[in-house]
Amino acid sequence: MSFRPAVFVLSSLLTSALLLHGADAVTRNSPSRYRAFQLGGSIADVGKEAGIASPEAKVISSRPERVEELNWRSDPSSTPDSVQKILFRFYNGALFEMAISYDPSRTGGLTDADLTEALDVIYGPGSAPIAKEMAFNSGYSSTVRAITQWDDPQSRMTLVGFPYGGGFGLVVSSTRDEPLAQRALLESKRLDQLEAPQKELDLRAKQAADTEAKDEKSRVVNKPEFRP
Image (cartoon, rainbow, N blue to C red):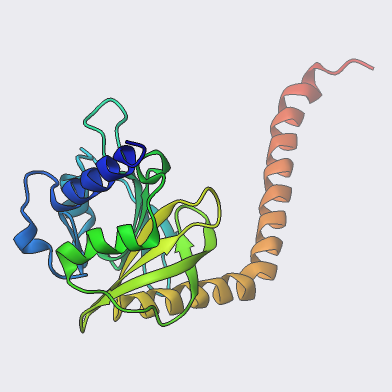
């Protein structure tokens, strides 16, 4: 009887992986798509599927290209879901990466093989990952263990294991846009560093001008009233 909880959770993981907003498994056979979310989709598309009324993505970089992030978390008061949260990342307005974190309370006792089997049902047989470790963005960057991957010519899905708590997640990314977004972020950082000295000088000049303007206003008021 002790194996029943793990079997129930695995069954729940399979079911929830097949269903979201009433969609069926037939359209879930490409690693470019996770549940109702499709790589290349807009912020509005993702917000609609996630049930976010007015999605406001956080701008990570606006030059030389626009990179944005949108967070989604499952509602504890709704039907239990194996997914705890998803970080969506957009390159020039198009979804290029999803970092999916499963709820540890719903994957407890499951093995790498269990998770791989659940995903194989939807995406077909996976393969050994190219690298043993990879970056995982979930609001902060960390290195995770790569377990299994699924590929097509435009996208890649990788099952990962977290170093903390033994949890699991997925990274779904566009093999075309993800490298472009990373290069754009590096270039944005380079530009910021290049312009930092001048920005610091401009800030100090503005602060000095603001202080001078404030002092002048005080002088106009206080000078006529001053009595030595």
